[in-house]
Length: 469
Image (cartoon, rainbow, N blue to C red; front, side, top):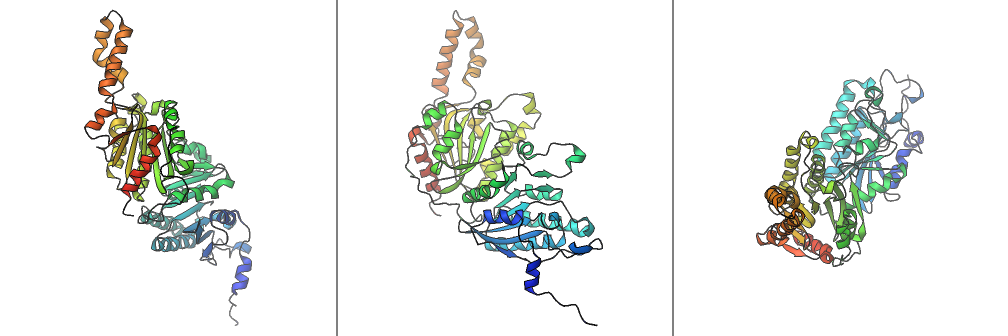
């Protein structure tokens, strides 16, 4: 009996999908013509349920490597055009092999999710497939940056895999959930999840590739490599505009003023907007920005704000990226809602992140630093390497108005002119207890700087802390 003839490479190639959304996305992420597939001809596991012309489909995951702005990057993509991206044993093998190669090469991984879920006919093998990918994702965490891109459906265990990545970018038309919203009736739209801190960046489908490239600019190839990007911005560029920006509460404007060429990528914009977190470069170094937003809740450190800031600090700590903290905050926000949201543990997490981060940390107190803000927002004592303050900043154990009421309330009420007495006590408190010079005298502030030299001094501090790179 004649044996079955083995297919040639040419015939195998002719069976592969030519056009797909996945391939289009890869073309946008990688420099033109640089993407090379790994395991290109791997086919799915056949089960008793596989019949007809789809029985010999290629595996629903594309894996490979290429260059992004000339730098080596790996990627795996669930291709919806192949079995609707159904995930199983061989797909997991391809992803695990990709991770092993990426870790050995010390290069980032981009994971693109678009799948209808597990290939249920594979049974326990499908469950093990998810677990193996989780294992590789966790093992690589903290050594090579991982960016999750949710371009379609990201369901079940794969939703957890996406959350294990460092940065999550999602299309505004995508879906991410563990249990189907048809069953739970929960709002799992990208914008809703972004408001809970589950997704870092939400954008249109056409913008996904550009956002991936944008984020990769700021991240190093691995935890042992410097995060640096060439640019033509002057290290000594003056920033006199920041004075008016601070007065108006425009912290986004301040970040733009300090960042190289005014470029940055905000993360988790819809979550705890009283705290701003972003990636940028300053003086050519990839940095994380943690900034209180005085336009929202006076920049208060709420439980969610603390968690959000701690998350970015931990990310920067993993990859040796400097953290620049910009402070203009009234400190704690007293409310029953906050206290019922594990306030103390959230603040503890923020303090722990600052104290334990093995990376350069530079802080600039631009406006208010009251109470909690003067304790955990990148202070010298909590772990910052260099702390600056502007002449008009206010560093106080509590808000001056509250302090005056607490200490002199009865005296003011009994005076002949209460309003005048209150103003006098307020001016006295600010002069004696809010002056940044007091913090400088005890070494909590390294220097009092002018707004115009803000970028210049931050650049110098970062350069100093990275002098041996």
